[in-house]
Length: 229
Length: 323
Image (tube, rainbow over all chains, first blue to last red; front, side, top):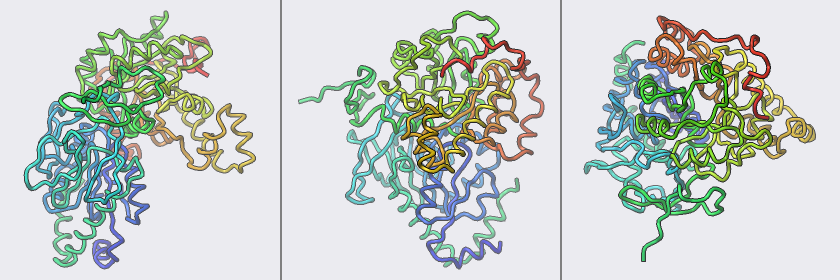
């Protein structure tokens, strides 16, 4: 509790971001976030969520992350955090985890949701169809984004509350934003592309200043409601 | 005027121009296919996970449901290859295709060491990773496959850092320590992962003049040796394999520095494969939490019986294949 109170007084740059560390390339995300000056906490258990200002869901196997998140009591606290406006950035498997609807999931696969989109898992086919390409993403500036698609998903449909950030040349949507959530089909954490993480950290800082305005008590109450391990 | 559409599958191995336009369902995308980054990148996505040997589509389904990050499609698990003897080769394409059709997680398959045509066939079958594996009988006792020419990535076994670097120099996009497959005895896996991480640690403290000698002694390219001395890790993902049979085995490999584990015979040669598979997945994620490993280890039924590596006569030690 003391630590949470402290965070309300720290400078806006001293954000603390969790990286979901059940499986996948979470260390690559942690490295990028740390290089941008953020505090980083690996998240494997519900109590790891208590002191974070935002969350990254990395690339990996979405069906495995889903299974472990449910089994180890992370699923509901994560859903709750997303519903309450916690900023989350998901890449590849993270995009799938954040989608309200999923196509081609494994039997019984669930998602945390939050993005009002339908996503198709493994939309390009086998590894032979994995590729790198340059994308124009106006939200991140004129310099194109070099993107690596690795057995990646694609956003098949979006509702009007969702802003598509990037499309392939054939028009398929591969990056989206909705409120405090952003997600990509590709892996900025693997290509030395830091602008998505910077964009996300700006959201996290904006969320922190809101927390300060509305008082820390609400945040403390929410943390206390997280089910025990 | 339409651009000619070429599937990367149709590109010949060794093609210098990898930039192409691929045939996609309903759409097409231009980009660079089969790049080093996407090959190594798939292994990055498998980290913290368990890759399971399966010999039927039914086993592949059990593995996917239990939380495998990928499956290795085989005709026989290493324990049976060992028991039945004879020449072990690439699996029947029908079996590999049936397993690919059954699951949505990545499917790997094994080619014999040096058998570049088996590798071409596996790429044409659209497997997601090729394991150039000592578990099969080598096809070439001098050369490994030139792996740079393929779109599909390769994982190769290694018993020490020099061997790992020679495979990376040939184009391997992922390394697994070899262990001794089909034994259920984790001691060789321990030996090999300790050897590789120990040799990496030794490089980190060396001066530049010492690195030249280290490269000579490791029989590995100087540039790779210097890179590892600088970064303190392999440029590709390092899994461990060969003898992992319990959740505690998997967690030990992770604590010793592996990025993930392959489990071969250990799952489907045990009493309750589905339960053991799920338990090994949990222990791999929570490798540093003994209470979760303890819970995962309860009620799993019989582990595979196994063979002590010390009882294996030298010609039957698979880890000695490859160099």
